[in-house]
Length: 429
Image 1 (cartoon, rainbow, N blue to C red):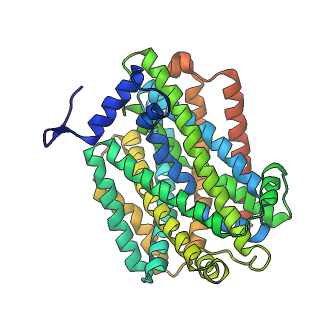
Image 2: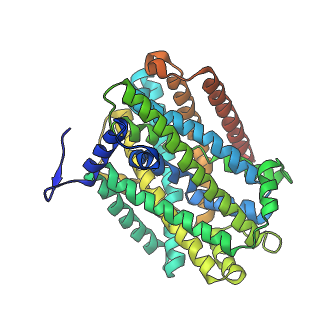
Image 3: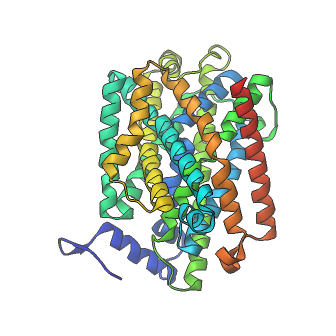
């Protein structure tokens, strides 16, 4: 293994690779081993707690209390399945979803997938970048446009860590995810939570009215993100290449555990968002539907600390998810057309729509919600491609999906696509 030496010592990434080798050779076991192998699913989990989730979860909790918690539970289970399949694709084949699509599909289909995926990456970054800038603006009382410029520079600085290998970037994103989680843990301690109602909301499937149905469709339709499906396969494809089938099997087992744990944490954070909004707003402030309104309402209801934690979590979510969105866009371009775009140019391209939206005076929260609708157009292609590849023996060999996984994956595609179709129909109405 080639190693890079910094000041006479191995780099952080080389130490991480050596640690993973120790795990694969069973010199490390238990939770310590999982922590050494973890990383890709931590990065991908950011897609499930991005500012778009803030907007929908606040509306769900404020309007319907705990009634729509079950939606988050089901959406999270579907997400776990598809992210596990994406990670498996990269580990088994050594290629990512975009590269395999280029190799196996006719060129016209490849061009369509690439174009739609690029639009999806820009729509994703619109939500994430705007969310981070909005958090910075409210937290430090800055105009939105300067906040966007600062957020763009901060995102570029974090992305620059990738030049030092995969581990420094994974650590930074992991820290930001931890900040979001701790903020919402503190919010739960501050808010007046009706825990029996929380349990009921998770196990009793209910849609109080047509508007709740529309919101539920939006929550599910925006959960399985196109860029996350592309990115996860790319993060695992060459991170620590397995040297034999035994190591490949071990990597798959650790990957599945990591996906289960990290996306469970992301699901709990999403549920905490709904629970906090239900405890703070439901009953007296059911009209709260925007991030700015939620912040200004939180201060008198739960106190300044709760409002500050809300903005800190939003800022961490926007920064981390914007980083991940840019990474996904880069990977999509490289995979489909084998072209490397400079990082600064990719960052600039994805920032342009956000500045245009703000300059036109569009409501920031509404732009977040609308961007999720755009994503629903792009979702069918990567979902179907992922299921198709992981079910093929000539691609996956003995690691192709079992009959039960095939059934669950096809059912997941049907559920998510059906709900997305309803979302689009409602949007056009």
